[in-house]
Length: 241
Length: 241
Image (cartoon, rainbow over all chains, first blue to last red; front, side, top):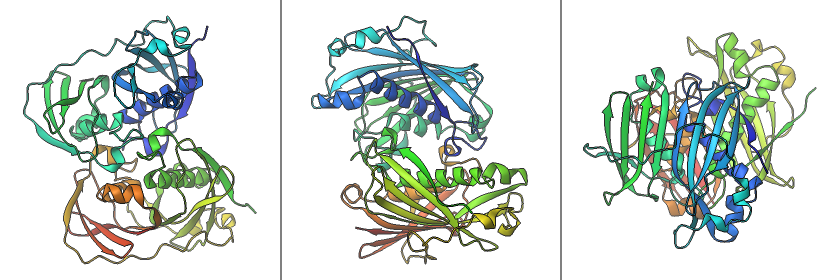
């Protein structure tokens, strides 16, 4: 029986904003990198899955931040897997500072797909996967199914080369970046992303012209990115502190 | 007397394009990260300079690529400093694959500025800097002073939050990314950036609406990014193979 594993990172100068604190994109990048490393180490990483023409797809994410790490800070990311069903697994994260104090937590949901048909594969096919799951309490509440905001569409972004990841689709973190870049700079510098939830609904490709609709209710901002067919590709809810 | 120093990196999944090769942005990011690390280690890093209200500014860069490293490849970046004048120093790079074969080389020019006045400082003020310079041959030809292309302006990009670095200006690598993202995808996937030269001329700030003019001559593409005042902020020359 395995337990939690911890990965250590340093927040590099290229990963901070003009307040010299890690951006939300940096933090999510570290979580996704940790997920990849830990899956690799457990024998079910993307490279292994690719050998049987399968891959992981991130479907939902929730991250709660108490304090953003600063430039040159070391952070410890502790991760473990829980709740494997046929179609979905949960990977959890505690993010600690160098002194071991918890500064953030996150929960992610993943599906395994066939790379040709893009259909879901049964996670119980993965040898040894069941034995990896841990019974620790969730670090934050599960990411919810987000609704569509009632708001007009405005142009957001056309998908370009630097957005594409190794699958040829826009990288998950880019959705977050495009939306955050529409927020007022003063907001970004004076407030904190207390809880962020993301639903990844569809992939986008080079040249896709995306639109955004967003609605604010109190401290919560609900956003939806739509593709040229008017389909939602990603929904994000920010609760600001 | 010091010699060259070598830093080792792995090309991570988030750093590759849809062909699973490092992007040019990734490679330049590694060079700038190496410059920062090596300067830190030698006692003249940004953190030390900040204590006397000074900082490094990248003014020119030339990078020649024979072969792009692939996802999960280890690369060795060897660096050394040469040619210190009052206003400008040169930092050089050899990039080798895991077997020690050279796959790329680069030369960068840096100035030291006062953070309040933004004026150049005398590099000979840096204790121990002169003793760090090495007399090895340059890995590639020095970056030239690029001219302005004769072409119409088209809208390029408005500077957003995620473009800003710790100085509050757009990160150097972003200039490269914005221009590369305007190139045809087929070009990017089928050709190679044999030599890229960049002149960084001015800083840009959040909300700056930038335009691009570019002219192609044979295998060379000359580009200029201009600010809302019509001033050139960056020129880039790509020679494609």
